[in-house]
Image (cartoon, rainbow, N blue to C red; front, side, top):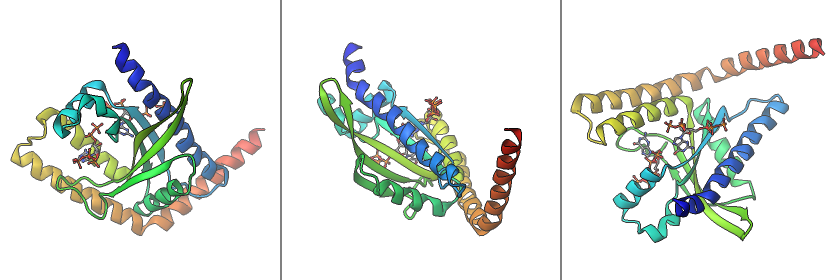
Length: 211
Ligand code: 0O2
Ligand code: 0O2
């Protein structure tokens, strides 16, 4: 157990640091009162059982677990599909980590119906033994993509990837519906953003009045 704690410590530190940094990007947009392409950010360290399952599936030896790309995982949720590439661009322009791979499951959705943009980074963690560079995966997706992936993920857990035919078809239909929802929302994006800006201004005026 001590061995796992030591192995996972830099990943835990990386997730905590990256959550602060990526959430900070959202706060900066709020400060400028401009539409934030980032709705919310989550992060997690992969549970040990999932690390072992994945290593087993992918034939990664236990002494090379540091090759696994998503032991540290961050997720950035966006309102609109167009926001995703803006976020990717913001990540590309940062100089506190290096991008090692990008996977575009939006232009090329997975057979399951999964859509998201993945950016794999090499992130330097400062430890008392010096710098340790670890891999982390940032998944960028819309709220609709996230809704679908979260539900599919829990069903996958239940059925261990072997979906009954009717569920598989329903999930594909649901993926199509999520895609259409994103398209519809993009069509009325201007309208939505005007309303959001109006409410932000109103809130700010109320807060100024309270002071
Ligand atoms: P699950 O797997 O849903 O049962 P805070 O510090 O309060 O902002 P906190 O409590 O540390 O946040 O958690 P956070 O950042 O809100 O999100 C943790 C959540 O990340 C998990 O919830 C998952 O829903 C989600 N998550 C799961 N897998 C991944 C992944 O591969 N990458 C990313 N980025 N996020 C993932 P739970 O409740 O821990 O677990
Ligand atoms: P978790 O922590 O349970 O989310 P591959 O060999 O291409 O299948 P690889 O190399 O691991 O897989 O990378 P990939 O596919 O780019 O990214 C893996 C992660 O993307 C998964 O992590 C999921 O978080 C997410 N993902 C990929 N495909 C799907 C899918 O069909 N449905 C859902 N819900 N999520 C998906 P894990 O390992 O599942 O872990």
